[in-house]
Image 1 (cartoon, rainbow, N blue to C red):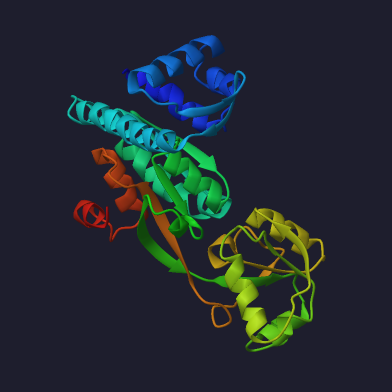
Image 2 (tube, rainbow, N blue to C red; image 1 turned 60 degrees about the vertical axis):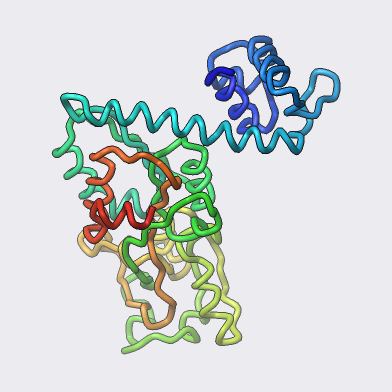
Amino acid sequence: MKLQQLRYLCEIVKQELNVSNAADSLYTSQPGISKQIKQLEEELGIDIFVRNGKRLVAVTEPGLAVVSIAQRMLQDAENLKRVGDEFGSQPEGSLSLATTHTQARYVLPTVVKRFIALYPKVTLNLHQGSPLQIAEMVRSGEVDIGIATEALELFEDLAMLPCYEWNRCVVTPPGHPLLEKQTIRIEDIAQFPIITYDFAFTGRSKINKAFEEKGLSPNVVLTAIDSDIIKTYVEMGLGIGILAKMAFDPQRDTNLRAIDAAHLFEPSTTRIAIRKNSYLRGYMYDFIHLFAPHLDRAKVNELL
């Protein structure tokens, strides 16, 4: 049994049983992968895949157990490599992050700047996606750390590190009627076309819940995954925006006005997601601490 065979196996599963795609992803040949998988099956004495001719159509029940163990073994092999790197002469390596647009655009820049100053020889790779995509990237090992607000708790094999709470604001063009009110209500917001996040992003479920509790149906005319897109269409006069308060910058958003809406919606919690039993290098602990100062190495280890 070879680690390379396990890599082939896990990549086939990741590519939804498409051996050709797995071969392209691993820069090898399809016949070579198929041969190695057959050798692995012969060594184990089981069929890992259900086949229809030469095509793989499903993973067998014992195959599911093999895949699960193979994924853990590959993770442990990566952890061993990181141990060696950790005690090298200089802190070199890479750190891959997956997060949403709002976090990448409005929260992470100062953290990234400080991290690069501390670790100039560490390559930082930033990926953006929906919370579900982020969780899948962490789970598959494509990234080391995921940062998001929703959906992460759906994955039992991920450890959740609570970072901070945040809430929302309503953005309008200057002179909008809502700006005349001392305190806005859900009923007031419901009178106008609304532009807000796609349902999979940034606490959208809590926005819907606030309207539902009042027996109201919001007139959502446009959704987006990007806070800047929401603000652009509000500037055009297509509606009012509901977005994360952190995404409004008075110095940049001079054509808009923001109204605090924290009293209308439940707060959301941004979390860091890490695969359980991962080996974290020292600079990874430091990145987490820069992002969430209450999460020092001892606290992270406790949560993991």
